[in-house]
Amino acid sequence: MAYFPEVPKQIEYEGPKTKNPLAFRHYNADEKIEGTSMRDLLRFGVAYWHTFRGTGSDPFGPGTAHRPWEGATDNAENAKKRVEVAFEFIEKLGAPFYCFHDRDVAPEGANLKETNRILDEVVKVLKDHQQKTGVKLLWGTANLFSNPRFMHGAATSPNADAFAYAAAQVKKAIEVTHELGGQNYVFWGGREGYQNLYNTDMQRELDHLARFMHLAHDHAKSIGFKGQFLFEPKPKEPTKHQYDFDAAACLNFIGRNGLDGVVKLNIETNHATLAGHTMMHELEYARIHNALGSMDANTGDLLLGWDTDQFPTDIYLTTQCMLVILKQGGLAPGGVNFDAKVRRESFEPVDLFHAHIGGMDAFARGAKIAAAIRKDGVLNNFVKDRYSSYDSGIGQKIEKGEASFADLEKYMLDKGDVEKNKSGRQEMLENLINDYL
Ligand code: XUL
Ligand code: CO
Image: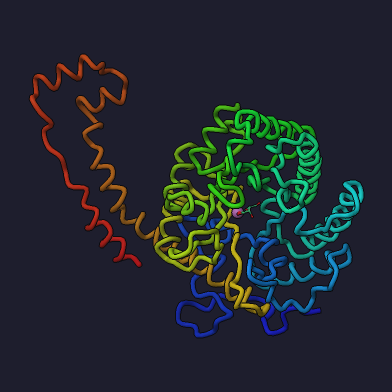
């Protein structure tokens, strides 16, 4: 059965001149960038929650999305049928990966036991489709935020029962991620944060969150799950203050709680900008700490201050992302997951294709541009030269730890003043980047 009859069997690469909206202009899976195929460099993932569960609802009205395959009830049968829809979509698009929360793929039952049983049923179908299509699971995660039991949070809830339920749920989610060959497991805070410090013991909540992660890691080890754990920063929404605020806050949490090397980061564009950072900043901050694991690709809106999760189309943005990703030599075992949703007004199934094709092309183009910039070495050479005063003389001594404050004082007393500063040439470099677009 074809759920997307107006879409050909395979979205093909037709090159930049094509007028076909259901074709790639830049994403050419086998074409190599810096020696790696685009398929293996970009490792695109489709987000089950937005693409197959998104309804287009907003606080002012119910969903608008026209999804003819959806039944009226959210039961196991529907969930299994939806897997067929999902895999038809992913296969036609040619994305190698998908990502899900437990509750995206399977609904809750009357109690935890039944919920787990339904999940197992759906996981069988997912596994079957993965085998048939070759589509792989980039990461799994657990939804610890939608059900009212998590009204105060999950691992950071003041209610120990909520912690226990969340633990049981994550245990199961790691197990099914393992069963499906998932290459990573994501922790996004959900409601792990607070609205008001008058009613919050921040110390205990943070300790509980650390305990939770260690327990998750212990369990992963005990079942032989070798996937990478990823923590996903986000500063606000749904709580006023999320504990996983940004890359720096997450890395501080990871380092302070003995989770170094155990947990890396999944960086999301709209979360970066909500935290007052550029995406490039967040990616680079994670990279220099050896913690850049994966990314959730999307974009916010300059005029709107919330998590709009739009598909990325801005070539500057994707070029900046790819400059960092290429510097790291790729994201594997992570990837580029489109944590993005079509607008409420784009309600037809084919809009899901237009959105993903645009996002994939934007990243492919950004990758080519970033590779060209790197090939010419202009930025690299400029930065290298800018710091060259540390390559010899007093700078080298500072970096090697061979100069004390007294030595530096003597050096400056002898010299009298700073010799010369060089221009940062910001505008020249910005012009130069435009040459490559
Ligand atoms: C929420 C968000 C999540 C995570 C996974 O803003 O980004 O969908 O990516 O829980
Ligand atoms: Co995300």
